[in-house]
Length: 225
Image 1 (cartoon, rainbow, N blue to C red):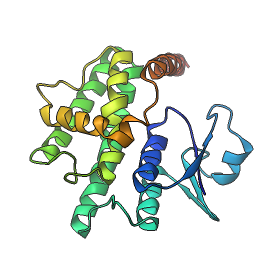
Image 2: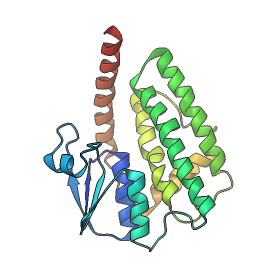
Image 3: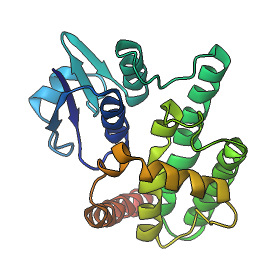
């Protein structure tokens, strides 16, 4: 049986969990305390010391995007990546784009104030505009009628981003500005596998309130230094 080492609120972990469940793969979930890392995590991922980690037989796979591709190549049912090489390349591009341009900016916007918050908000909206354009003309999901690699990679937008908006008292997902994204979010969250495997929202709000305050304090401290 496969094992997934993860953290309950991590979108990186959840995308791997969703992929395993979509494929019908049985696995054991091992909850990790990322603030007091276990010897197991340090042994399995000594380079980055992060979750998720997938253990499959003697294979230890790290980095969520890499794990998604490993899952897709190991269990052939319910393909996640597109069949055409060009489409696969595009899916990888947009997954990386959303991580680097939208996620990082949205996280900073949640944890900051003043001009820094405004700048991060603008960057988040600009990135989401690009994703909105990519969604235009699509069916239910990025890859068509079925959830695929890019949907899993960007699934955090549907559930985590609204929580970050609440915690940061900000608006990124304007439904008038991003109608295609909103429809995609609804389709994604209403999929049975996704709907049944989401962290409790109220607990997420509490957790991210705490984290944003801690990070804001670190930012303020570093500026004083």
